[in-house]
Length: 412
Image 1 (cartoon, helix red, strand yellow):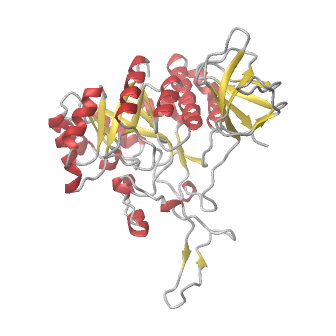
Image 2 (cartoon, rainbow, N blue to C red; image 1 turned 180 degrees about the horizontal axis):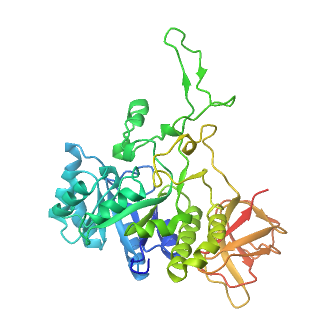
Image 3 (tube, rainbow, N blue to C red; image 1 turned 135 degrees about the vertical axis):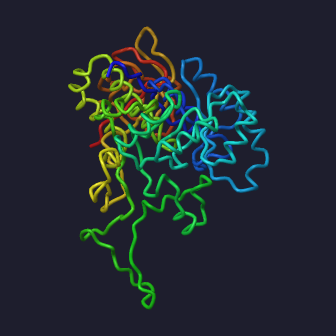
């Protein structure tokens, strides 16, 4: 194991705040979408100014930035595309994620200093396609989510050493093959391959017979019905050794549309797990229950290991609900480092009150709990609770806190 290089931890950045959280909580790199060409059109994404600031922030903290351009392009999409790649190259982006061969060719010619990464949407399931992409100029291939660890190991053994392999290790799973879905387009007119997926795989379905319109017959697993396309979330946090042994270069977390709290919680857990494993494999094994407890404090579906240990059976789908498991509420983010007296300003995200126990999740270090004894508003007045979204309030903390540390509260 010690001959293996520590893999990059790659985190989602749906907006500038999430980018900063991902970097500060331990990501080696982030991936984000600009105003065009990405597959998360509903995410806030980055305009020119925000992307430039995000790249500057990431680089100042030793992290890389990859920009998504992974749509399957139609003819009209190519207008202005070369200029877009030149622009992000000039801003200092480290690489670009691409699915479409035509888009790949445009990026290669327009922005030669950008690393070219081949998206999971390109459905790379074998060493032959990976080698072709490498010959065309790809620095990295994101392997398809339908591969087992053994298949990834075989690709690693039969591709050049300087071709990096990236794989998803955590987050929502798409029911469609490598995410290439027509269901959203067919049902809603929103093209998943142009970044407009309506996520119909999470809907509840019924059967209707054509001669009896309006009579909905449930497709039942039990008396509550079924969500027949609704996959559990991927989680490989307790399988870091197996991932490392395949030779994967980058471990990728899904979630550009998730909250800053989700991003911080998941990134921090994986950061600690990876570092512990490389420092002391026995310590990693001992702390697995702790990692899993921490990561489960963010909203999530039930977990699965996907295709990594063989083709999934019936247990990888959640047939009874499309809801999330939530044990904790995200109640605020620290806006500044605490002063010598232990006070700091924070921005409220969910209601909490004086007398409640809350927990600080710092970007670095162990979480700690305390009882809220006082809440001060911007005028210095005390109040019994913080009920207003994004209200700026001041608290006293028993330990030092830093900007972007987050507060959470166990749900009743």
